[in-house]
Image: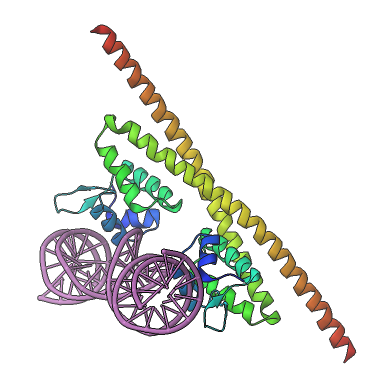
Length: 130
Length: 130
DNA sequence: ATAATGGTTAAAGTAAACTCTAAGTCAAGT
DNA sequence: ACTTGACTTAGAGTTTACTTTAACCATTAT
């Protein structure tokens, strides 16, 4: 069982954000006698999954939708499947764009490096002339 | 030479967004006698590059910074190189996260499909019992 | 002639995702 | 006894990146 502060530390987000996610029904921890939030290991796993979805650009509303379907049990499996398949498509598009842009940057970076080298040569020649 | 509307069509963003990018000093088109924006082929190429940076999660402020360095000419090459190298690193991190999450989703999707198949079997068995 | 189309501006409004503030409770340490 | 630190709430504020509005001008089609 983790407190909100411990979870925040463990996953690298703020306690504010954790409370915000709760308000958005994305993660609903237990409470102790004093009304304080208590996160179990499985809450932590779920949270880590949520953060992976977030890092791969799934909007909070979609994540909330998935979380909601989860609470509704077995007969939402088809909907959950569709949601994950849609997100997988989105990831594949992102992979494509990132791959292309990575190549573009490689080229630009190479040509910048060449420019710097040539400018360096000139500087050296210049200094020799002095 | 393209009008703002033509450029908007060509790259798939709104004229509003193009004016916003101009206000942010990201793209500064020419003007005709009537004060209307005129975009050249090279404006268009630059814009397409900007959109690739945006699609790969570079914030507008960074893009503006790169655009600013560009206008300052040759002696900003080292700074521009650094900026692009930093972005390349960011892209590589994204590629890693996306790849991992893609695999996770593959597993989840497979197990959801199995659940649906099994539930389907039961339904069939159930209907046969009637 | 007039209405539609496409351009102009400055400025206000919006959506998403936090992030912070204020005002409070509670338990432990000095 | 009192301060420190971690928790609580409701609600206000912030940032980013647009997006819309209002009020206007110029060209083209009916």
